[in-house]
Amino acid sequence: MFSKEEIAQRIAKEIKDGYYVNLGIGIPTLVANYIPKGINVVLQSENGLLGMGPFPFEGEEDADLINAGKQTITTLPGSSIFDSAMSFGMIRAQKVDLTILGAMEVSENGDIANWKIPGKMVKGMGGAMDLVASAKNIIVAMQHVNKAGESKLLPKCTLPLTGVKCIKKIVTELAVLDILPEGGFKLLERAPGVGIEFIQQSTAGRLVVEGEIPEMRLD
Image (cartoon, rainbow, N blue to C red):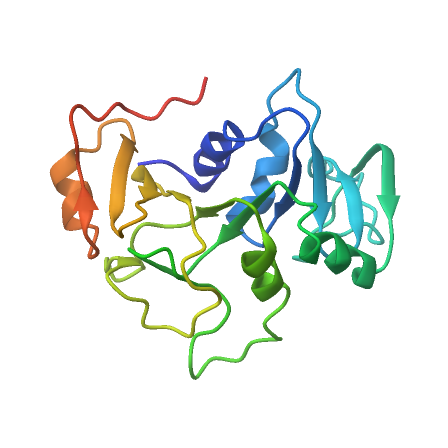
């Protein structure tokens, strides 16, 4: 199975030259450390930053430079800092090419739940609703199952929804999957050493398996 860092590394391969990319809280923030060499990518943070770099080394943190998840970050030459109103203006105007989000649940229709668990305190819904409503392309970075071993890829989400029919692709510790237009998780790749039967057992929603399924590669 892949670690959180390896999930982020695999997602980084989906980023193309010239993309403006928003990284959500959690696993997606790790993607900043794995941007492929030789391509020009601008990372956007919804709290008001263009040109986010990798995480700082220990001892080199600047407490005034944080991402949307309140983690210290670095900035790249040419970066720009502005208010959240301008940031969400970019998002709502569809200036972001790719959004990478974490999720608690995703349905086989591409619905996503990633902001609230009933009965638990949350600081607020954040910007996820704007992102899923406006983004051109959304990839989810998430764990395939919860701590109890229950699938988080479901026929229908049980938690309050963030967005409906908006997810295109999912990368978990077990697999890479596409959301089919007619509904269902299409298995594209599997983690090294993980069998298709195990992925089927870990996926509560409809899983579509066609032909040989290659192992995920990070190089």
